[in-house]
Image 1: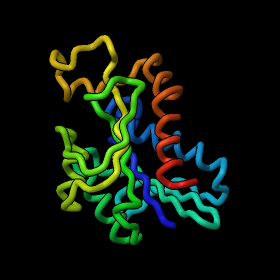
Image 2 (image 1 turned 90 degrees about the horizontal axis):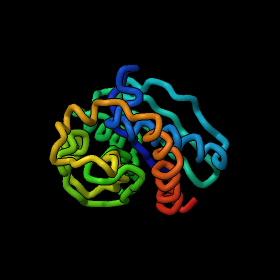
Image 3 (image 1 turned 180 degrees about the horizontal axis):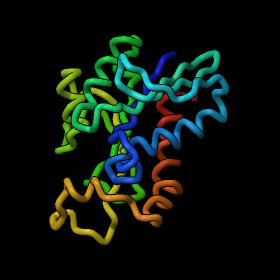
Image 4 (image 1 turned 30 degrees about the horizontal axis):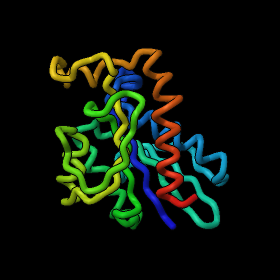
Length: 187
């Protein structure tokens, strides 16, 4: 069975620890966890066709491709459309991991068929694949003590996580993401 797991974020060193790169961070975490059980793996390499960093994990029953689009967040749909088409992965086997400012840091939500809620990466994917009927894991990035209404959202998502926030992601959000994916992939 073939699967595609896509983490959303922005390429470049300056974005590595930003809130908008929670999807990239989650994909890296999931890849490392899954590689403990799926022993055949390829190193991360640039895939020109899909404009993404790509790696694959395999066993006799599963092939899981991991992608990190290098198109910048607002053009994530380009990578998703090309990957689904080129690698012939059914949309129902495609999972997108992304940051969500509407969810408290440390929480994640598994959803399918939801609108973009103002997230430009998701908006791009919906536009390019012409449907919102795909699985998403929404990773909360809003600290509990911050009122979202008082934030400049564009500026907030491009700020770096604090060390404390990265610890919460690593100990709560990303392990929960792995659990959702193990269930979804039936590993």
